[in-house]
Image 1: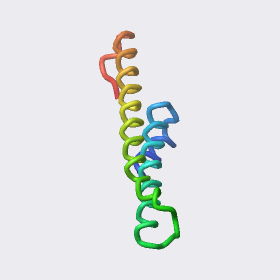
Image 2 (image 1 turned 180 degrees about the vertical axis):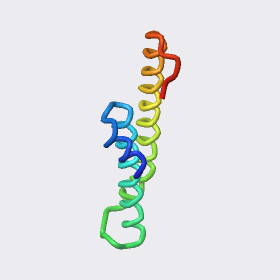
Image 3 (image 1 turned 45 degrees about the vertical axis):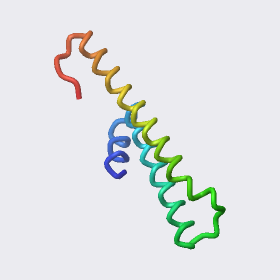
Length: 85
């Protein structure tokens, strides 16, 4: 998550925004699930499923981030740039 945050600070584009959102959602789901399971917070039982939902959203956002990276590389290759980062 720290790497995603640093990438977002360095370059605020759609790809890094999607990666940061994906990792924030995953960590939020993990923290909510563990808090409920360990009895730290008195949360409803549906919170236990928040980690699974966050994992699905994490996968979806990372797929979107990969799509943006591929689109960026394709547009750079059409412009004649040989390398893409």
